Length: 166
Image (cartoon, rainbow, N blue to C red; front, side, top):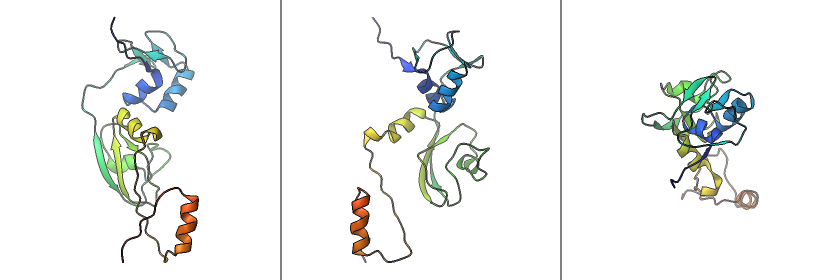
């Protein structure tokens, strides 16, 4: 008996780069998705040989390579894929021909490294909290930091602070 890898339909649509999992759930609720000609319920799992259609169009895994981009995001750019809602969005800023999306986000006023990709699998592996990926943030302030401030900060936020050596 062969080992069949079943996958939730919303995860499949996300992995192939069609839409996010939430957007996939909405498409399913609206009856716009079919699996082998039948309208599924949210949470339905598919096998590798199943045919998935959205609005009558066959959706299949792309055979081309995924895109991975490391970007030094400048201030003023919003980490959103909603190009209609935000004028200064990261997708328009990069202008890539493939559908890509950021892995995580940086605030509009922040600058620094952000990764973008067309690979939905890697996004989920990186962002999933249970994978315990360590994050390091560098913060620059415009006032001196006191020992009292650090004590209060550490009580509120459960992470370590390393001050630069002066």
